[in-house]
Length: 145
Image (cartoon, rainbow, N blue to C red; front, side, top):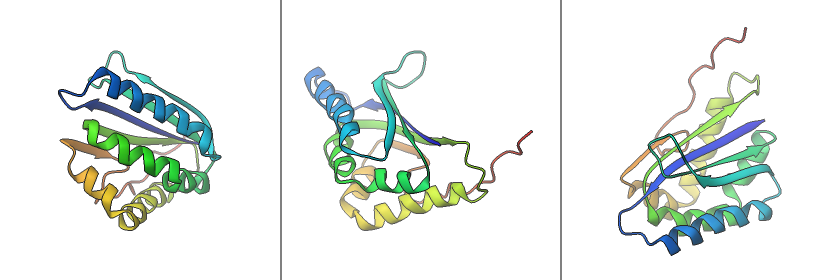
C-alpha cells in the first residue's frame, strides 16, 4: 500500500468559502478515481499546516493512475492557486527498493506532460516532498527489522 500524504496552508486573503469549496472538491474527486482505496481530507491540528489529506493506493500502478487522472489534474488546477506552503510525502510498505525512484519518476513524467501544473507548483511559496519538481525521492528505505 502507498499512503500519499499532503499538508498545506492557504495564501493570505483566501476566503473561507473558497477554502471550503476546494476541500469539498478534494473529497469529491475521491469518488471519481478508481485507484483510491481510502481518503481523508480535512483540517490539521497540532502541526504547522492548516489542512491535509491522506490518500491510500494499492500499488505503484494505482499511484500513477491517481496522479494522472483527469479529476486529480482538475483539482490541482483549481486548488494550487490557493496554496501558499505545501508538502507531500509517501509512506509505503512496498518492499521494492526502487519504490522511491518509481514514485519520483511518476511525478517527473506528470510535470513534463502537464507544464501548466508544473508552473502552478513553481509559483507556490514553498513546496517540498515527494511530488516537488526536480526532487528525486530515490533514497534507500531504512532496513526492516
